[in-house]
Image (tube, rainbow, N blue to C red; front, side, top):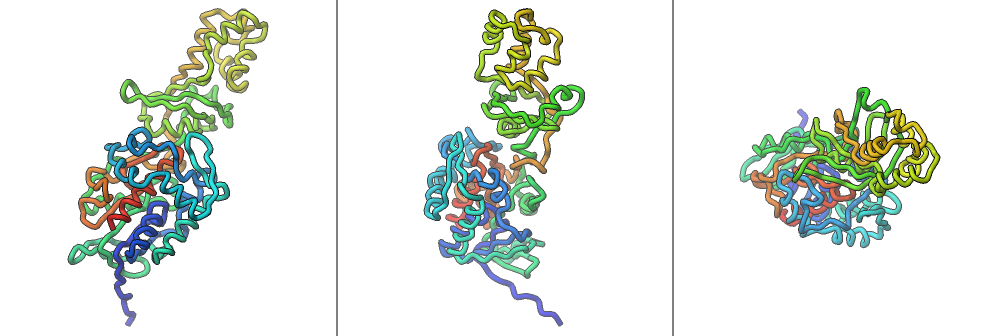
Length: 406
């Protein structure tokens, strides 16, 4: 008869070998815990590997831990303050420097590896090795239950394991091709924890129908814009680059606003945020014989100018012959272009998942849930950062808070 594998015991079992899971495991191991990391994929930290164009935008210097709601979305935006103030971008930068990893700042505080995102992954694996962390990959988890004396028992592809603490670091639903799943949400539900509805965040917006036809040919065009959505207190705006795609709009401006955009509501774009368009067009009318479209091409990219003037016969003439009303209409349209997305590119293209495990059921100090010994860290929690390294900093900070508590 085949003998069943013996139950193996650990202090902490971390499910998910991504940024948060590996970082938490390494710290806990170095603090004397016997730690096991499990992941259903044979690869580690794929999200780090593909982020930042393969150079991993690993944190942001501009993060203000005293005002996290500036850069994070959550049903309780102040929840993340505790962890973020106890493990700051400066702390993680110090670790990167101790490992001799060269990095640079692009803009708006965004830090990237000089060489490759793999440098960061190797750093996390060295930290795990330093803590004697065991890693089982690929290794699926079939069941999680609480046994006697509050100890957790897990059925895995490599046999049963037991631990007094389980850390869920399985991320969200974004980018399923690298192994994203709803495992973390299912475990939360199993143990009676509340969830905030999930949706794609930091994601391109799509448009269809006749309204998009004039702009479909602009795919590949990028330009700086001011983008906003929402009304009054709910209004959010960014100054970033916009990218036209075959299916709609992308680029940092759109990714940022997508996390705040609500279905069936418009976004508003100023396509020349650095230019006082009415005055610029008035000057052109007074002193130029060029076609209006040619003058416009000195203020915005020429492909955009061409697509724009095609929409109105009044704009297809020399600027000196254009009426003041036609010029005012053009300036208004370009500086306040309002359009309603039909949807998003979904989790396939989303960089993060909004929503997740409800922070009301978690400790902001330790990330332990109201189910004793069960912790949730990183993206699986209802804390979502802006584009630009904020989500990785939440991974590091939440993992650090959890590891200290373990």
